[in-house]
Amino acid sequence: MLPVLREHAAEVDADARFPVESLNALREQGFLGLPAPVAHGGGGASPAVFADVAQQLAGACLSTAQIWAMHFFQVDAIARFGTPELCADLLPRVARGEVYIASVTSERGRGASLFEADAPLRPDGDRVVIERTAPVVTGGAHADGYLVTMRRGPDSSRHDVAWVYADRASLKRTDVVGEWNTLGMRATESIGMVLEGAAPAHNVLRDGELGGVARDSMIPMSHLGWAACWLGAARGALADLVRWLRKSGKFDDGGPSDLVLERLGRIRLDLELTSAYLTRVRERVESARADGRSLSDPCTQLQLNSLKLAASELSFRAVDGMIQLGGLRVGYLKNSPVALERVFRDLRAASLNHANDGLWVGVGGLSLMDRSVALI
Image (cartoon, rainbow, N blue to C red; front, side, top):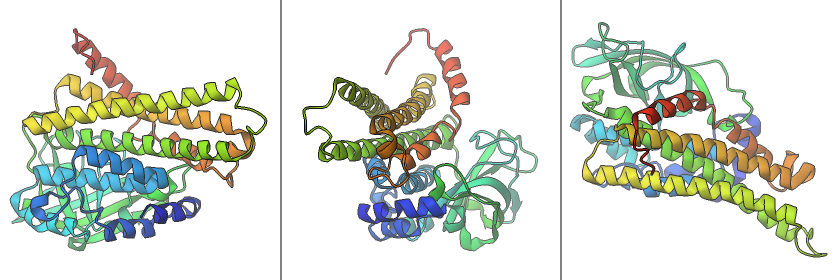
């Protein structure tokens, strides 16, 4: 499967088109079904498996890895908070690779907050009516279904958020709005969409009283997944660069200079630190889930946000260092034997995806609440 991702990575980036061939490979080899519970025929993948697979996919094509990771978030939320009727109907189809689920959380004027929604669900007998516009839906034009955030009802507060799953076939309108022509992450095809239609009322997730869908599923799994994808892309780039350096003949007259070794060491340390923090946060999530504990406590939320900040900044810094080390010919050219230029552009988006500026403020606020400074 990884050869398929590598084969198409440059083409789908250049054309800013969805990696259809790569998604088909994921379907055929059972990867869309990995997050579905074993009881429904899926792989029942743990957070450890999730992070490992995301890294491997990202080393071949970061856009494809993020598409898969975001699908994983949606399935995790449905498996944990879906009604019995929804889970019985949907999860076996996910397990068979029949359903790729896109996330619809963004709205104009408020970004992609998981704790606010403007468009209301409207009850209609045993169904709910969905009328939703979103400026960014990753892979939305190719999705088989959507997990959508909406205001729970016309009279509800915008902070009373409901999560509802809608099959594409149940929607009368799934229109693409605008285009996706970006610096990086071009193959995610994160276009705007208009969704209109209805879904069974039992497709509304049963949000928990404490952490709920956002804090106990979406936030932890998204930060684990994004961090794993960014680390995997940078790790793959470093592996390619080291192979090229060893084969290039640049060191035939002697070993590498101290400057080259120092730069390699700094790059490696950034990835080691990211990997170590990802592992510790992932272990914390697994422990909480095993014990049935919520992840909504301030310290855990601080560490989840810190993971996203560290991974986005350190992975990008590592690839920037690789470009400096590779120089103009190897690091900077689009047709370089080492695909650093594409990874550099892709990872520049990491700090903008759920913007770091807001997360830094949140981490600062949570830090004031933790007088003991309980580090991970």
